[in-house]
Length: 136
Image (tube, rainbow, N blue to C red; front, side, top):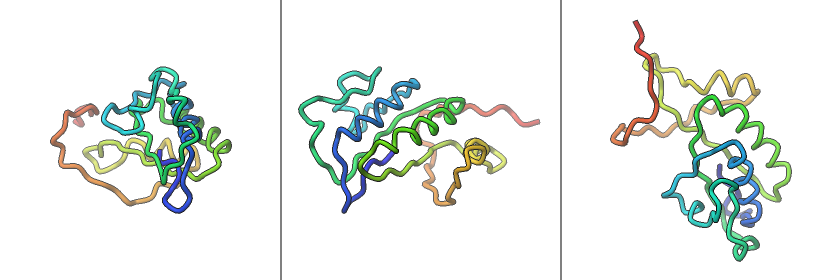
């Protein structure tokens, strides 16, 4: 979730609202993300008190969730973004199925969210986290 954009910015107290919302559903924050180092409690998503009023151009909150939590996560994000004094954009990363489909598309469709065709493709050098069943 990108909170703020260059030209608009975001206060870190708004970023904290997002981290706390996704922490409630059990999101696993990505350790290498710069925002994660500001989180004092990964279970609650609480950021350091001394930085909450700082303004940034934008802050990207990266986390992982199982696909079965995507719907509730998006509902939480819809709820929390109404409380923010900035803009947000959401990017979903998932492995493309062998048939070329995205396993997240039906969930986004059910939620009335239009999926944009833009994509970033990785060559798969990392440790695979997504397991597909064999198609027979």
